[in-house]
Amino acid sequence: MDRIAITGGARLEGEIPISGAKNSAIKLMAASLLTEEPLRLTNMPRLADTRFLGRLLQRLGTEVVESDGPDGPETLLTTREIVSGFAPYDLVRQMRASFNVLGPLLARSGQAKVSLPGGCTIGARPVDLHLKALEALGAKIDLHEGYVYAQAPRGLRGAAIDFPMVSVGATEHAMLAAVLAEGETVITQAACEPEMNDLADCLNKMGAKVSGAGTSTITIQGVSRLHGAKHAVMPDRIETGTYALAVAMAGGEVRLTKTRSDFIQAMLDKMVEAGVEVTPNNDGLTVRRNGTLLKAVEFETSAYPGFPTDLQAPFMALMTLAEGESVIRETIFENRLMHAPELRRMGADITVHGTEARVRGVDSLEGAQVMATDLRASVSLVIAGLAAKGETIVNRVYHLDRGFERLEEKLGACGAKVRRLKGDGGEEVE
Ligand code: UD1
Image 1 (spheres, rainbow, N blue to C red):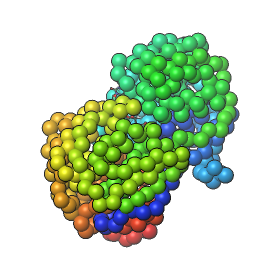
Image 2: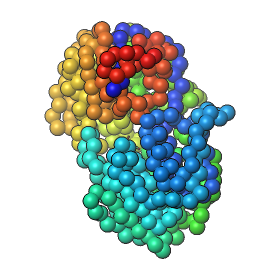
Image 3: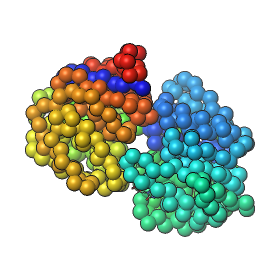
Image 4: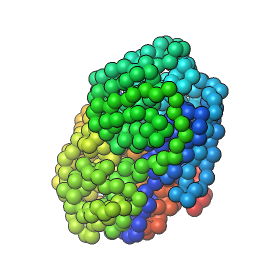
């Protein structure tokens, strides 16, 4: 299994272009199941997660063609017909969001058998809200042996879907199913993340009638069919925030381009409070830290527009070197502080009680062998490695490959000493 080696101490200078958003791209790809016409997605990130989903979609009947178009990497998805409504455990297990094919399959062909995703390292992550939304739309759902058997032989019907809590995935799933339902659907307590707007925009280009995305009430007038469209995937706000934190950690000045700063305003406000200079511009933002001491800050994660849970781990890495004690509360996932013990291996002073971490800044971190159990935790270790003395080896790089496109190349172009070691033997591939 590949590893990433980081030699700490290099300042970062230059520019990092931000890729299309992983979390949006995979839902947009699932939307291609809703029409027999081609869906052309531009600004596509090339990641393990998009590859997993591409493989699953091919099994279901989608033709997936990747190319480099005038606007960068693109994927053309065409589902002339659904040849199978079966999403097996092996493919759903590899990437949880594959579960979101269930709604489009039901909406287009009236039936589906999709594996339950199972638990995952950051918490139980159930799918009860997804299933309740589909049931509200008239689907008959049965669970047997780890599979969801869903049927809607006479099609889905518009309904009121009142979520008891905010769920990004369930809101997207409800939208993906309701666009082809007969009549009106009103989703209340919907997630407001910018990815909702991206999905709604794409669906509307395909002929859907979705309004209110980005607010807590989304209204959908069902249509009988959707058509092909071309849509540019929104910039990855989590990649943006992660590289902003990398610059803050290592020091230096980097322009993050092809992105938007307003998508991560809550996190940037905390960076500024910690003493980092952040200057937004039309094409993204510039992040600068030249010798200033970092100050500890307190925050808790929450749904958009709050502090994103996906940036909690990399922000904790930054706080390991801040002056004072920072208090970090994770409110979205119950088991998402697994990076704390790994950061401690690098010399960080962190105590965890339940879902709260207290980080007392230290003068320096030391490189170590570390490993993480999820994507965002892994990248927090890379960030810590950028400022640590000596070499940090991050094991289980496949987590990073799920969500970061050309991480070592992007950081390397700004002067970071990051390289990929192939396999356990340490042979370098770049
Ligand atoms: C998405 C993002 C993930 C991000 C998260 C929160 C993707 C592929 N992933 O995950 O990066 O960290 O949003 O911003 O887009 N829940 C239930 N029942 C359900 C669904 C969710 O109880 O049916 C709970 C979850 O366990 C969690 C909370 O709701 O505690 C929020 O999860 P949710 O917003 O659904 O996250 P995901 O869509 O899985």
